[in-house]
Image (cartoon, rainbow, N blue to C red; front, side, top):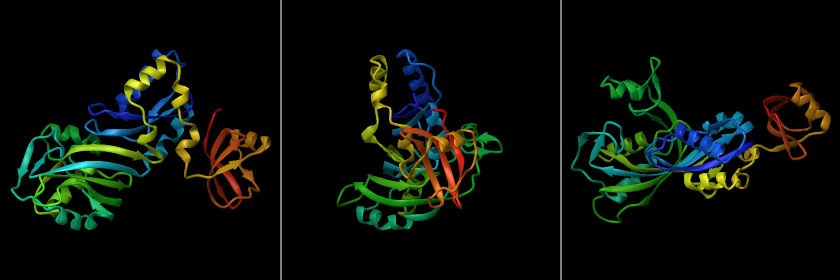
Amino acid sequence: MHGWLILDKPVGLGSTQGVSAVKRALREGGYGKAKVGHGGTLDPLASGVLPIALGEATKLAGRMLDSDKVYDFTIRFGEQTDTLDAEGKVIATSDVRPTRDALTAVLADFTGPIEQMPPAFSALKVDGQRAYDLARAGEEVILKTRAVTVFALSVTAAADAGALEEATLTAHVSKGTYIRSLARDIALALGTVGHVTYLRRTKAGPFGLGRAISLDNLGEAAKARTLEHILLPLRAGLDDIPALPLTPDQAGALRQGRVLAGIVADDGQYFACLHDVPVALIEVQAREGRVVRGFNL
């Protein structure tokens, strides 16, 4: 079992619990042991695309963490919570409600490279401790702003006229972007406060909801021994990287960790394969190829 399972994670389940659910399904289905990891944390209160790497695909999970993401999210105006979502307690209120036109106009200020202050309730570490642990203990959490990129931001559902109690937006963002912080800052820019009441990830890197499977269907597929039919290949996590065909001698050299000389290819990363068998993710520079990640297949 080497490849990707794309979970449609339900609300209330953490990413690590998603990994445990896949391990449990493999075990109950009588599959052999396999390494399992996830390709990007998704808050328990968020639903949607959670890539799960199996076997040799776990070597590529780190690349998935660096990938772009797309989210749908709803901002409720008038109340800000300490967690910036519906789970927290209200810490600020405002009678101001924006119009759709005002909301649409302010989005340009949050598109492109921006500086963002992460939520106090986040998994970031402060002096070796998780920020959310400190925040829950009532301690003041001071985090540094971070540079992120919002590639696209648009309103997808809101009243056409009058004051808005809430609005749903879609954001295409770089790694490290906190949607809860984005919602907070949009509300503040509109002269009010707000928090996220709905958050759904619709895409993570190359993986979208179209290939995602629910936990129930995952369990049924495992028991029916049909997981192979929904398992995406190792290559699916590298759709932005060109393939490089190898000769048997070249494949043997890469498997031994040796440098390939005389490669006729531009500089950059390649997915090196012998026929249809993945051998390695390699970096080519000055016609020499070096292994970035080798696959034991």
